[in-house]
Length: 337
View 1: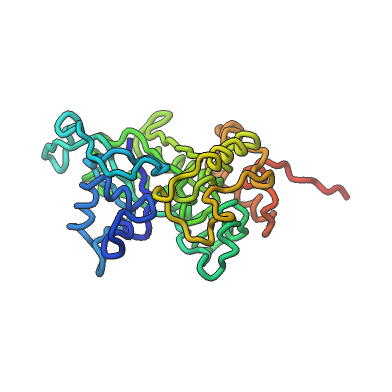
View 2 (view 1 turned 135 degrees about the vertical axis):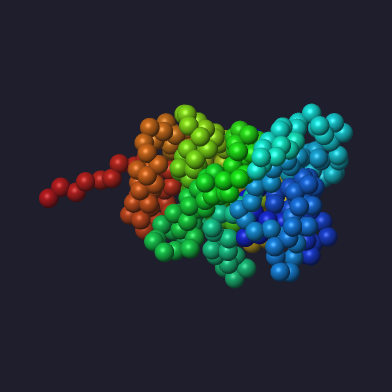
């Protein structure tokens, strides 16, 4: 399965030339736990100042050579090597311009960013960070044409980065041979402070449009969306993609067993009375969850659902009283003359 790294505008995180350690984001941790990715990023650097690569980027042949890292980073306090890491047993023969190469198929690595980094300045608007972590910041739901961080830009970013046709014809057979599926976490949310429900919708729509470029059949490139009660970059926020009771239970779990301080970094403005997890408050969770969304719209076209999301959110204006999922499934009221 290909792993999606929610990168910044450049792949490499902020460890090169910025920090003496793993850093606070999952991007930096992946650079450390997958040293082959870090080495390529360093020696093939395209940045004028720091060793970083342009995104989107796929790195085929990458492997997780250290153990303990998951979406929570709860167990990464001790960097330990995988003692039985595959060296030759995972090799797959691929063709590139007529030549055959043996390449690891363990963990293809894809790095690309959502188009919302810095859409609000939490340093100057400290009161907005807690709102964003609860999916209650109006600017998270921007659907305006021409806005650089609008929902359409997120769908396009996922499509552009995943579609096989975005890459050279010479490497497409190797990508098809090595990448059987794609796995992602709360893309768009995390430390970019996007709405986690809109993040799921952007992934689902973008992938539905991109997957057919990988081949024919019902599911030429499946995508797995991983859910965490305490994702390292914004503990508790991803719980909001669940419906009502499940959402509350997820947040309770996060608050009952919060992450260690070593497992995450967030600015002080993003905490809730000193706590890292989003509090389990009734107004945060909606009636509609990710399962309801999939059941309701799995048979629709991506274009129809995309238009529905934008139309419904535009009609809501700046209101964030209802969750995105609740707004999308709601039947509009009809005013009779």
